[in-house]
Length: 164
Image (cartoon, rainbow, N blue to C red):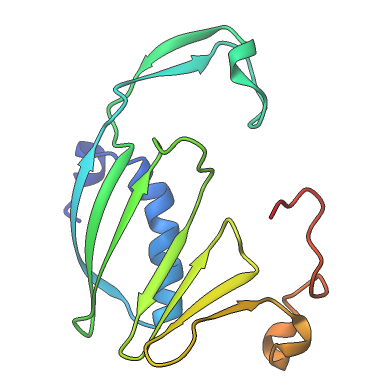
């Protein structure tokens, strides 16, 4: 990015949600993203802001609001290219009603596909070309010794407040 580009083209959805998606996919793929082509858009040019301090998950319609003009993107479609030429695409959105910080990945390989959804973090879907697809559910008893210490709940248990 050239000097001053950040001030000239500030980012919101892509810099926030998109940066997390890029970090995760680069870690999983063990490859760096080296090129991007993005189509960014501001869908809602005016947003409602509460006039008083509000906790993140409080119902905002109970509070007095004011209009705030928005000059950063809240939607983006991004094409990416990894260092070895592998291509990908992702979409970021802060306009999809009901989605709360969703990160979704699908990686398609020659004989299998893999998908993971942050809204259902204990599941990994594995698609197969010539056999039945699989859905793996997180189970500490099946993990290798290097990752089992990162799992804090036994299989079949959820964190308090976690929904299916």
